[in-house]
Image (cartoon, rainbow, N blue to C red; front, side, top):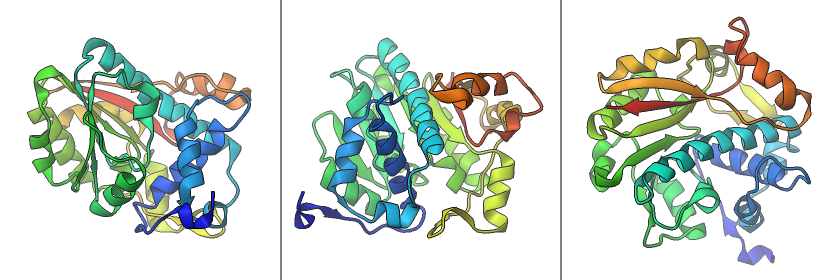
Length: 278
């Protein structure tokens, strides 16, 4: 593809993290024995005018596979929701250039993507709205986005790679707002452990020589997951979603063991969970 046909990227520090996620997801999708079939992610990387390797360094195979498996845990929750609510609404909060729709859509559900204006502009230029899938340019903390959702056919909200960049009080308020408005719905989210959150706030965290990760003010250990229930009385169940089994010794044999050992479960770099509202 000629350079003039590519889409330029201009994003702030936190929105730019969506490019790191896309870069590693596409890398994993290109592997011969990939854990994530995601041709749309590969297409987007090829369409963007952005120095991925210069900015983020060479892709890290272990991180890329972990990213792919984490994404699959979200996909599984969405598939389960669509099996029960085939015409329901999936609300993706700050999904960036996530391509979940192309992996799991059932041809009947409605999808709403809530994005900061700068991210919404980029996403819309690459993935224009359709009759069932649209983008709303609004901060997730502007709770008026809830008025755009019809809860009558079921609602599932996803917050992938989002909550760790909010302040603890903002996370609690967002969860409570979702629980209050969408009774009978659910929220799927991921979290980083407290040690990682604290580390990003004390000093620069560099996945590569040229890239500094933004601070992550909110962290949650796997062992304290039930604290999410205190955000609102309507949060009646919270449980962790385990990663699918992957390639190699870490994701093939060791990761399942880490879920069962209390002494090390809080060391895992990310956790994916689902909260159900009643």
